Length: 279
Picture (cartoon, rainbow, N blue to C red):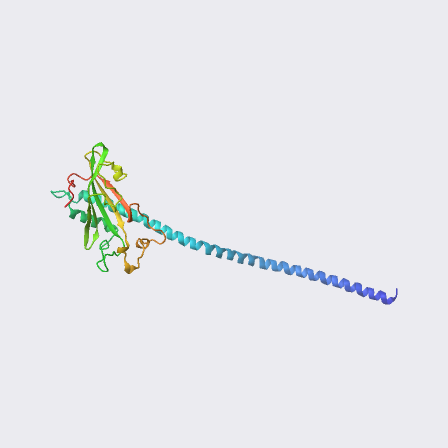
C-alpha cells in the first residue's frame, strides 16, 4: 500500500467520524427541541381544545336552558290561573252565604249576584279590566273575560237529583250582566250536565245530595275568543292572550273557549235560594 492510499483512507475515516458526531449532535438537538416544543405546546393545545369543548357545550345547552325556562314560566302561570279561579269560586261562595244576613229578607237577588261577581273577580281583573272596552267593539284589555255560573240543584228520592235553574254572569259594559238563564241542556259553557231526575254524579262527578237537600254549584272560568282579543296589543292567539310563550293552555273538555274551570259545591244557608230563580 502506498503512502497516498493510506493518507486518503485516514481522511475518509476522519470525515466519516466527524459526520457521525455532527449527526449525533443534530439528533440530540432535534430531540431537545422536540421535548421543549412538546412541553410548551401540549398545555396550550389542551387549553384550546378545552375552550372549544366549552363553546360547543354552551352553544348546545343555552338554547335548551332558555326553552326550559320559558316552559317552566308557562306551567307556573297556568297553575296560577287555576288557583285564581278556584279562589274566586271560594270567595263567591263566602259572599253568597253572608251578603244578605243583615237583611230581613235574606233571599239572594240578581243584584246580589252581580255584586258578588264584581267583587270576587277583582283578584284577577283589577279596576275595570273585567269589563268590555267600548272602544273598538267587544274587546277586553286582557283578551279574556270572567264568567261565573250559579246552579240550583235539588235532591230527589231514590238517590236522584235535578238541576232546577241556572244562570251565567259575565262582565259587559260598565257592570256584570246576565249572560242568560239556563233552562235545559244548553249549559255548554260549564263542566256540568243539565239533567233532571238523574244520578247526582252524572250532573257533576263530585256532587253528593240527599232527598230534599239543596245544593248550589258555582262554576268559574275564563272565556277566551278571538272576538275579544286586544288588537292594540297584537294578541292573535289564546296562548298570547294568557301570557304564555310555549305552552298552549288546555281548554275545557266541553268547550274550546273555556279555560281554567273551577267548581265548588256547597249547601246554602236557609232562606237564600228557592226553586224560583232570583229576580
